[in-house]
Image (cartoon, rainbow, N blue to C red; front, top):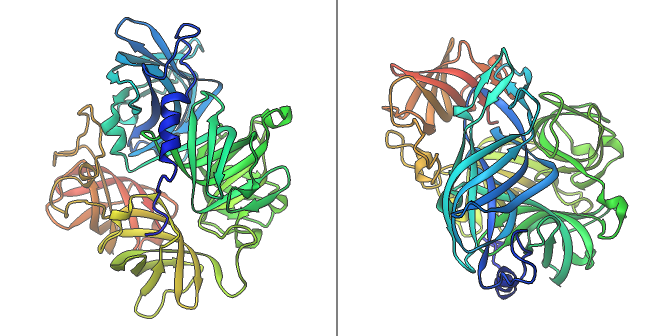
Length: 557
């Protein structure tokens, strides 16, 4: 597959790793860190819970405590970093990267904003607190790890939602947070970053260097296939670094490599010159699935945001006047994944930039093709950069006779999974364009089939390196407990749904099919009436006596 993320400026990266970072705030003035420190990247992740559809928390600071009890700053932000923990199952979101002195560390001190927002299984939003007195929540997380000089590493903070306790009378939440070491972080299905900073050098059309605004760590940025760069100052949109200038203040998003301090960027937003005080104002953004669109405003099922939304969904105004960095106003439809940026006053969001995931870069498409379409299906064959896909579902394009479609992945970005996952039998979602019988992929997400064991063996997420390294997984028992299964519907009889199992967790099915009782389940992204053969579902609940009693059913398409 073309466009694998080859770090063409590895020498510059290595130099940045040794010499490019700012200090950690605890080293005496004048001390050199280049030979006695390393960059440590902190990720936030979550161990899945089926009790809440969304849990929004705000992280204010993280400090590492060494063997002598001294604190070393890893992250701090007055506004805090906001995460929807429910979107981070087997996924790591970068919090920050900072230089730490080499040595042994014993714990992490985490400070959370007191208020959090939870959306329960019925869609009701609950505003809760960590502390009754309103003060920020300080948590010391046991974390034994070692930093070796010049060896960049990663650590994770796992918000184990399965162990969170909520008292509805007092409104108090008691959190449980588990440390993840570098091996556990590297085993996550995906590690992504969104970094604001300043352009310090432009190597060529596809590469530039970024100095992180918060920590002054130098990061090497490679523009991934299909990347888009939008200049908010002029509304210009492009696909290479020609729009950039040294000292531009930018917001970069993409897959992150903590060892080489590199980002394979899929989008770059130019916010203004680094000295432009107006550009320093906080930018609000949200990403999620379009519930509805009336031509001017859209209703968004928010999955990621840098602020806490006021409820389960977000009304986004001014869409008809916004700049589209990918796609266009006429393409907007329910079910699409979009990112919006703009102004938020605590109750109203007004968009000035919109991006439709998988659509063509604005202004780059031709009139002879479908510029936005989605496919979901099983790979039946692969020939280098060409997949043959047995299509299970198609959006904005008709499923061909026989159900088989050729997909060009030569310039696609792998949002989830790796190139090695794209093999026969893998279940994938592809977004891109369709022209004269050929589908050109721009975004690929591997749903299942990346080294997962066959049904009836041990849990597939274990094969992918997932799970909680603390030993809190409850995936081996056939008794009642949390269970999760993803599969294709084979039959529907009343409230009993027979699923062909693609992935399972928390239990061991005895066959390749599972019976799910959906009589009391809450349905997400669809309703009970839409249950039909070949629907792809993710079902969560409890496993007992050979039946999965569902508490939530989520349509994956």
